[in-house]
Image 1 (cartoon, rainbow, N blue to C red):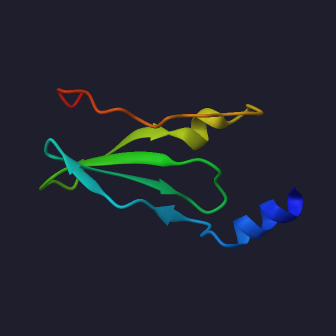
Image 2: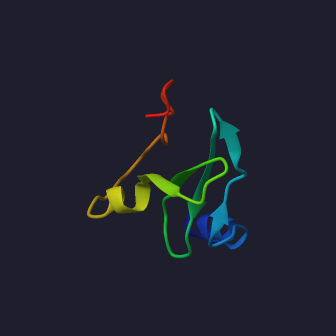
Length: 79
């Protein structure tokens, strides 16, 4: 199992960013930073420079032996 895990890990980037998508006037994307095991989810209103952190899975997972998230869900009114 460890050998397979190490092989898979060697084939993936230490940091990555998802392909952004636009929904209801906001651009959404996720990033995983080098050394982290979990994603951070962001949004930015189209035409502005303000970036909102929606969900920081890395921070939520601290101090736990297991963490699972389905990611954020966008409400109909963008709240």
